Length: 151
Figure (cartoon, rainbow, N blue to C red):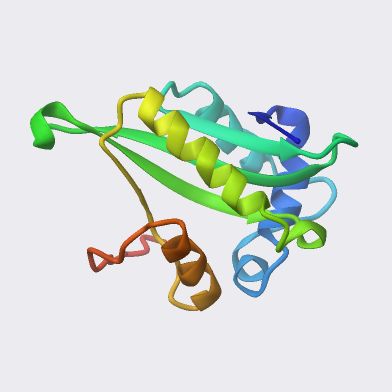
């Protein structure tokens, strides 16, 4: 298995994984052809030096997992950097095989390389199994998160 930077060719497989759960089906639009908005978003991510969208491939070069690592510079912590992990997905045929853990190990190591002092994430309260997974990896529910949807 390898973890590599995502390419434009990977976009359909990534959107398919994002749309393949009850919450994803409500917000993603997986169809052929994909809406152009996915390609525009990929371009913004791909050209931003503080964003890393990666995929994990198995030996057959099938994409079996993905995540996005965002590096957020800020003034607190003496000009520190936060690493935010988002859009974690593992292909349904490969869940429960340690893929998610390997993706997180990569992301945490990469955050350290990029001199982040903290790694953070959010998880939907409708995904209790994800919360348990993150806790097993050492994440603590230290803050209460809030969102305001603008559309």
